[in-house]
Amino acid sequence: MTSNRSTEKTDRKYQYNFSQIIHDAMYDRERREKKARTMVAVLKDFIQTDCQSLKAIDIGCSTGIITNHLSKYFGKVIGIDIDKNAVEFALHNFHKNNLEFTLCDSMDIKYPENTFDIAICAHVYEYVPDANRMMREIRRVLKPGGICYFAADNRLNIKEPHYNLLFLSIVPRHLAHAYLKVTRKGRFYHEKHLTYWGLKRLVSKFDKIDYTKKIIGNPKLFQADYMIKPDTKKSVLAKYFKPIKFQS
Image (cartoon, rainbow, N blue to C red):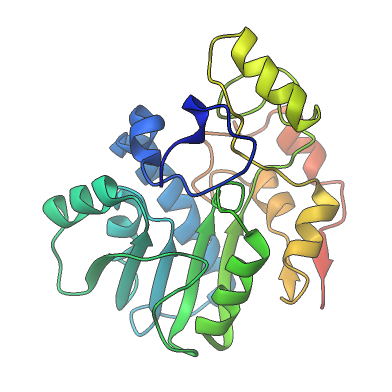
């Protein structure tokens, strides 16, 4: 997938070379493994059983750093991505009997239905051309009762996380493109974030348990203290809010 940030196009296509666009973040092993530890902590807390018999798929695995960490805890882990350079890096650097990487489109996952116990979909939806189609594919390849770890950024974010620009994800898209040009950070704003309510619609076919309150309330337990410092105002206030739980 070619990067649309260097063109004047107004349509959203694949980003085949995403690891080269966001190079430092995708190859930062320490940072990526911190994210992986949070994933494992949340999943183990939810599953409450040994995970060694479970098979997982990591959607949008990029350089494979997170996928490799997950393989320590699950019986089999397969990472998929359309970024050839990133997948080649993963294949070259990570070798385990229970670990696999493959070029594969998240909107057309090349595995049969009911294949996986766990699907990891962390900060991926905003990049794919059709996030709804991706979520349908995730449901298809999950076994009945399977779990999707879904982490996502909200459109209503004061500072956009990829470019660190105020209100970038909130303004209309044609203004976002102009904003990038004026600040000389790009020419096309590819990421398409959803609001909280849009995210609820995106995962509406799933039973939903929101772990946000639990993580904020006890960041150390969920290996998230690199993002949220324990005993800060944010973590203390979270204890007074009712957890969000949705049933589809």
